[in-house]
Length: 555
Image 1 (cartoon, rainbow, N blue to C red):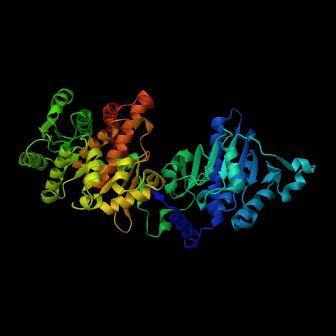
Image 2 (cartoon, rainbow, N blue to C red; image 1 turned 180 degrees about the vertical axis):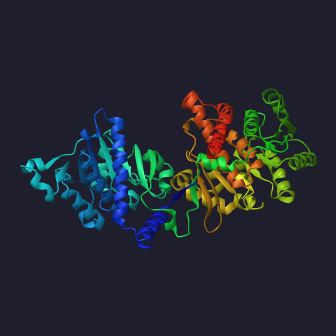
Image 3 (tube, one colour; image 1 turned 90 degrees about the vertical axis):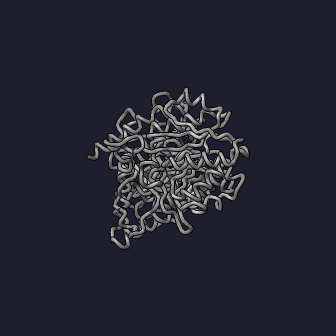
């Protein structure tokens, strides 16, 4: 497990490392700069035919400690023979003590240090006064800013940005963004909100980001993730000890973590041992949702799957998925007969899922409402997964928070994409995109449900009125999975996981991870453009094999 921290959590950790554990800030900074310099050399080695020592690197240094990291990295690269230019683009009166110290050290070692100046409307690089003696005449000391570098290191703001970019810094980053030169970001890409991941005025997109200590929340959500590129976490001496017992509740899970959550199959097990699932899915126009969800459940290890659907879907299911059991509940069925059939099916099942492709008619709402009432009154702790049209119906017919609170907390899993979350929560889609994690956590707290908020970076969370209890940002998957039916596949996989993984939150994390991994495997074989939901189902087995191999490797 890897912690994901907010801006305030990271600052607290920084302070405790130096104030309580007495590790000097300058020591941490030297290790941070070394990690940046090493990353820069790796990038240059990949992109340059000549040795990195022949490369030219522009290091953008802001006024704070992120800029100080930049000056220190410039010095280390300079000492390796790299042609560097440390360009100060902050405000001199706002420079931190460490920033001034690192700039002075760089100058003493002969590192070319310059100021970014807009002169007569032209962006220029002006040698700092302390370094003017290196130049034979005044003209050499000032030159136009030009795309003459092999790499740009962005050490302007890091996690210190608190307001939208403007003025000359915005002009500079906008200009460099047009250069088509690789960028290495230090801690955070400049212009990205380290808390929410949004762009603040403008932002410089990086090919790679070296972040320190722990991943920042803004690196994990879009647009932050898009601007960060490949993220590596440098261990510079800031450890979890510095949280002083108040460890972050948000985290990432690795393949090894997922393997540890996935129980081994019992050698003496039978089809009942591995879960009996009930999936209410499909409508006359959406028969595919039934087979996708049920097939995914079987591929994810379920022992038995019963589909509750309309009579029109029976021939399709029998042909496409003969392994599935079927219970027909048509919308026009008399109420008492509906209740009897749904109660019998719910009693049979270990896990219940509803919503995939069921439509939003009044008759289908009646079916969902009957099933939900049975579960609230008689089976309050039985795992329930609500997806797609079940969520749309709840949003249209009820006050979602009040309706969903009827069950035992954290025994219901909701799997909305952003549009469905908007309908449920009352927030606009633009508001959710701008503050995805916070709004997801608030809705989870308001409903007492485990929320699987689906986006480019799916977030699984459970929360109460005070704080997030647990929050997992998933790392697997790609845009090839943005295809009809992909959500139905996840619902089937989640139903299967809920039957065998004791902790329902962990079941959600496991299924989201494996779903994304199956999507990656599909894209790797077919290309992102060609992936269909059925391809994801076809690669679930390979995803499980990869995870099982991780488990064996640990042993």
